[in-house]
Length: 150
Length: 321
Image (cartoon, rainbow over all chains, first blue to last red; front, side, top):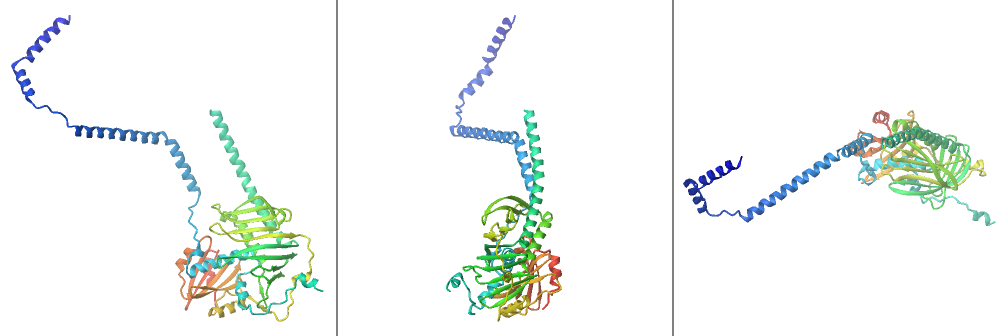
């Protein structure tokens, strides 16, 4: 049924292609110089394509990590937040004894006296007194050896 | 899977609940143990030797103290080789007599024992407020005795103090005070203790001809002469007692430091000829220490202590000379 229709079409097509107008166009196209794409340009295009492919792959990976690990990330962030909220901000302690000036000396003197008087029987003023008059004759300091001498 | 998860959740909840129950009981047990150790150190009869290390002008000083204690009276001698060798301290009847052989002086000072008790009790009572936490654990052997270790931590978890108490008698056998940077700033440790010593009542008396007896006020006047300043002071009607005086020399200038003890803890009154940078002083204070400064004529004064600034300001208004 379709065969006579196809052969008619083919005949009409051949006639159209061999028409004088078509032959003129064919001749004009044939006279055009052959346009070979520049190899440098093609190489650049390839590089760009490769780059864009790599970028989109990276983007997809980031998205996958972001969305895939969202629960873990959110959980970690929440835990960190809770830890930070439950702990007061820690200000770095200052080693006052290393600081110069009368103000640092005053703080150090107060702290030293405070802890010294807590653990020791002695007081902070003793060293001042002890070194003041070393020239004084010390009293007798008896020892076991003195007892054994007689 | 869900059953396992549910069981884990229930176990975790139970563990938390048990821990929450254990922590407060450990806290109160630690507090009771510390209170008992205070009573023990004041009432027990014992003789012992302890090594004491304290910081003075940034240097660690070491003393070996030979202690005899009976019914609230103590006698402390400093063993040969110690920084304060030859000195003797007798504490009895609300007085503390400190003998200095080189200068042939006895300083009559306020007793230290009441003070230590007040301070520790205040720490314990304010524990909840300041977030002080107590932990108890076996402390091993100290002076050949089994001990319990009580660790005191601040609200941030930093160790503030460690006390090893005799498991049987509660006597504190070892103690460490920890500074703001975590290093030990003062410590003592018994190396020998005898709970059945032979006590001579004369051990708690002093009788020495030609000795000069000095009060804290005499010591203050002496420090004033040494520093070339007429000293300021707190009046006797305040609850603060003067317990030590010293002269500081920093960068060519002198400062008199007076250490007082009162209901709020220790407060040091400094006087300097010249200027004190109050902003710098406040910045350096911190860690529970407050500073208040003011100027009278050519003298700068500062009160430094673990009290609130309004308390220091109020106290500053009573300072006179």
